[in-house]
Image 1 (cartoon, rainbow, N blue to C red):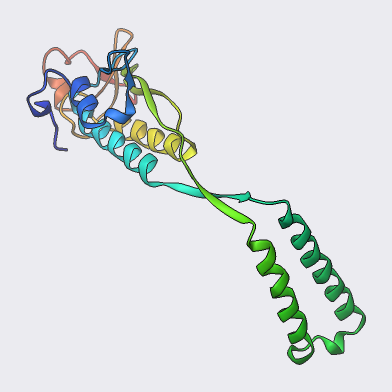
Image 2: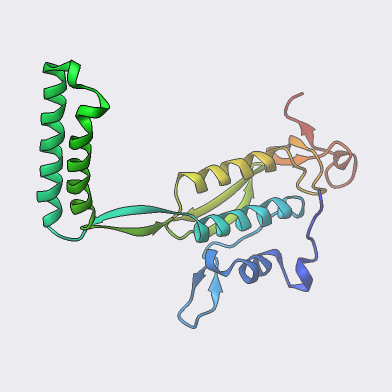
Length: 208
């Protein structure tokens, strides 16, 4: 895994994230950005967090759904007429199924379309975007990722969950494949070769 340890010559990874993804962070009264509880990420996980912040930013900015808005009470009148006509037609073909053919139904469809065209005049649509995401804190705890934020939706939750899973399989130090290890009550996710080096040679895999 390629790491971004130099942070484009910035002082630390938190600053790097703020500059690259300003919309994900809170603003102080003076306009400067802040992460209230800090953003500290082990070097081996920096690429994962970088990609996570990019995915969240692109999703929040580019994803929306359409919300229907009734622009006039006339909508309800014409929609009621349409539904009444539709109900009567359904009752008619139940009683007289032999008339449920295109030739007999064509006048009904033409008439119903006029009602539909009328009520559609009074319907508008607004774009509803995903609630903005603001990062409260990013850190490692017990060998796992803790990514605290506000806003977003279930898809953002899924992105964070997936990133947490990737971190649980990635060495905090090297960015290579790792596993959860412990030493005297301390936990870290480490690659086998990293556990052979100081100061990590006391860590043992929790799978053992």
